[in-house]
Amino acid sequence: MGFSDYRTALVTGASSGIGAATVRRLSAEGLEVYAVARDAARLSALSAETGCRPCAVDISDLNALAALAKSAEFDVLVNNAGQSRRGNILDTTAEDVDALIDVNLRAVLHLTRLIVPGMARRDRGHVVNISSIAGHYAFGGGNTVYHATKAGIHSLSQQLRVDLYGTRVRVTEISPARVETEVFGRLLGDLAEAKRRFFDDYDALQPEDIANSIAFAVGSPARMNVAFMEVLPTQQVVGGLNFAQKSRPPAE
Ligand SMILES: NC(=O)c1ccc[n+]([C@@H]2O[C@H](COP(=O)([O-])OP(=O)(O)OC[C@H]3O[C@@H](n4cnc5c(N)ncnc54)[C@H](OP(=O)(O)O)[C@@H]3O)[C@@H](O)[C@H]2O)c1
Image 1 (cartoon, rainbow, N blue to C red):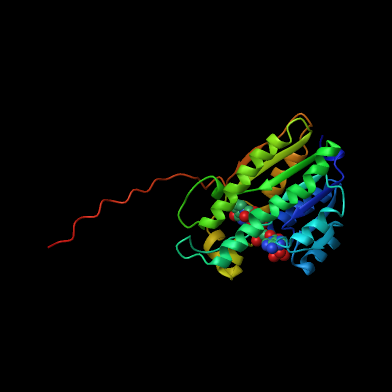
Image 2 (image 1 turned 180 degrees about the vertical axis):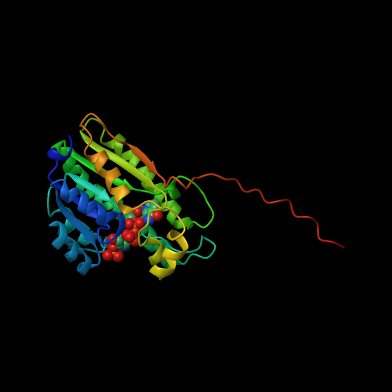
């Protein structure tokens, strides 16, 4: 299996960043791509550029997901849409917990249960889940709920491969480190500030790097399942250990 065996793809989070780059790449490979995000205007511009089918949908809306899943027999499902939030569990709101679980995890599980059984019946398909290094490592500055949802993506990707054992449906998890997208701008509510703080002085990955990683997995021969890829900027590493000193007794 490779691109020539697949005809259709559904990509979530398609209005910007990794998702938009993936729509461009998969469309260029000849797939009919259904591009999903909330921002209809951006999807319409992407459609004019690539020929993709724009689907303005909030993926936390289960009815909308069910309708979307019925719109075609999808060969490729790229679960990419995601959000993050500032702070950690010590200052996270109830809304933050619910929104991150709804978008980053719940929607992925629903789309998987709605679309993958058809792939299994047809004995053809490829699921690509975008997790994050946050799902695999603990580090300062990360949002606890975001880390937990991305760990969930890792776990469901592992188990999905077991569920699909015996079929020719492949499951790929791609775990990126820092990619220059709007994710940090959305977090701060200020794209220019995010660019200054997270990208101007760092050689981050570009969205195309992850789109190309997805294309490598999807375009691989049928015998080959790229199960997991961790993709980091060359100048970024994961590691480090913190050890707080014992507190000294207060002076008398
Ligand atoms: N950038 C990084 O450094 C990095 C690192 C590791 C993992 N990731 C992961 O990569 C994925 C893509 O993010 P990105 O970096 O490309 O960021 P991005 O540019 O902010 O893209 C996020 C996409 O998700 C869509 N989205 C958010 N909430 C949605 C909702 N409720 N319904 C439908 N679509 C929704 C957004 O579109 P609308 O606003 O139009 O809905 C947008 O298209 C995410 O899962 C993220 O966690 C990113």
